[in-house]
Image 1 (tube, one colour):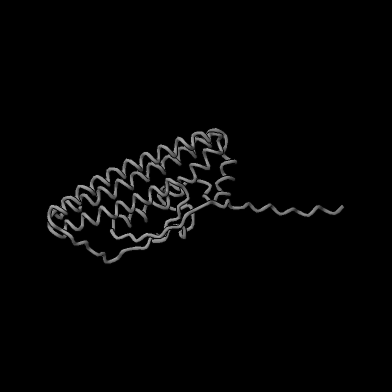
Image 2 (tube, rainbow, N blue to C red; image 1 turned 45 degrees about the vertical axis):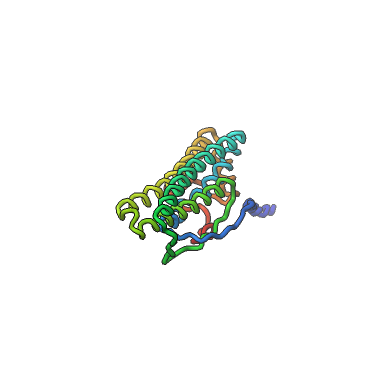
Length: 214
């Protein structure tokens, strides 16, 4: 009796997701570093959280997580805007009208796959605007070199810490799904969604570099 031919395994299809593609010019080194170090991993984590929570049957939690993330980003944006307004007043009070150019600005192609990603992109742009005002005051000798260096680092770190918090939320959700016995289901869904089977152990990428150009 002839053996039945082995049927090839069906190829899984990557899910087609809606995105906006927007290109921005980023000037300051601090904003460029946030994009390089945090933006892409954040984008992947936000999408992964949505995938994971729906897998474990907690769709209502997706809205809760999105609300928490949006609030965290909004609070950071408010702080950035307040500092930017304060420095702009200082600039006006000193009669400064010049704005510096930058030696190596970058074109940033943002692939926005969720409202929260859009929020974070605007946060990066706001950081860039703040740095420009701060650099102007430094070049015009209104603020000291030491103060400028410290402030640049602190604001850059604030955005990167925020991104790290969201990445940690993804890892916790991933672990919870495994503990609830959804390991195989989660593995399949992550593959179909274009994600790595496991979250990265550090801020790195799950998707091809083409997702973020700078």
